[in-house]
Length: 134
Image (tube, rainbow, N blue to C red; front, top):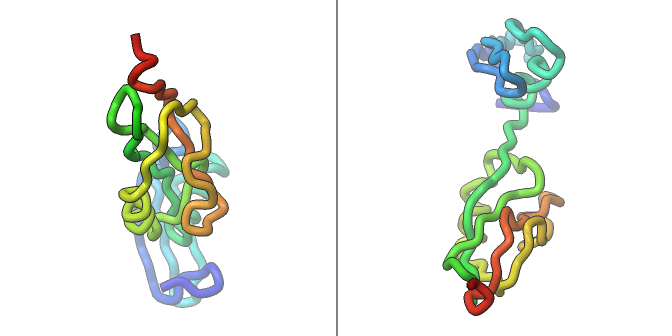
C-alpha cells in the first residue's frame, strides 16, 4: 500500500530497468518506515525508473480504433504520453466505442484528455479515405 509517496509495508521487488540498453538489474526494498532503498542502477534514470515503477507505474497505451471510410477498418493510435497503469483497462473500454472519420494524419488528436489525465490519444499513422487509395 502507498501513502504520501511511501510504501506502508515492507516490500521487496526485483526488476530490469528499461530506460536504456544497459538493462540494469534493479532491486527495490522498503522497510517498515516506508522509505525506498533502490540498488543495482548505474545511472540516475534507472533509480527514477524503479521509484516510479513501484510508486506510480505508467504506460503508453497503443491500440486501434474504428475508422469510417478509411483505406483500412482500424486506425492505430497511442497516448501522447504515459498514463497511469491502473487506467489502461478503463481506457480500452472507452476506446472500444470510438469511431473516427477518414482522412486522418499522424499526430491528429483522436480523443483529447483521455479519462481526465490531461493526455491526448493521437493517431499513429496517416489514413486516407478508401476512395483516395490508388
